[in-house]
Amino acid sequence: MRFTCDARKTDQEGHGREVGIPYGSTAKTCPVRSLRAWMDAASVTHGPLFRAVGRDGRAASQHLSDRAVARAVNWAAERAGLDPSRFAGHSLRAGLATTAAKAGKSDRAIMKQTGHRSVAMVHRYIRDASLFDDNAATGLL
Image 1 (cartoon, one colour):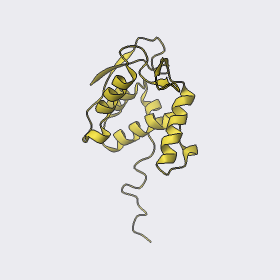
Image 2: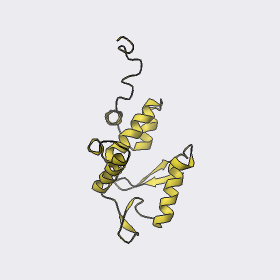
Image 3: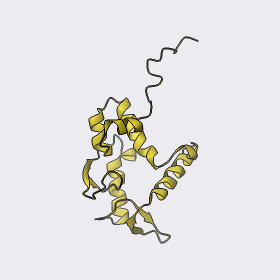
Image 4: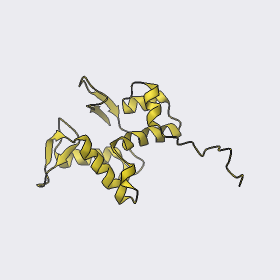
């Protein structure tokens, strides 16, 4: 699925950028199917993609605030049995960058997906996922 992203932080001029979202391996975890279901349920045809939902169940017209994203991430972390204080909105971006790096994706490919403009910055987002890969201390004790 091709999607035009209007990310405030990575698109200061407000031009938007196209992002490719691949289908997932299962329907239950597929980002394309989930995104289409949200767009249908929220009647999103233009404007911000991720929006608040009012008490009446209708999607607002303005984008979610960074605080609302953080609350949603905290809620999901807690439901997964994790410590929500260790997660924030940036955890989503860092998780994608880290998982992609661990899978051998190039810095260029990661930057294209995340919108990072410098290799140094994307490396700040990539957590040390390989800390225990080929670790010299493994099996010594």
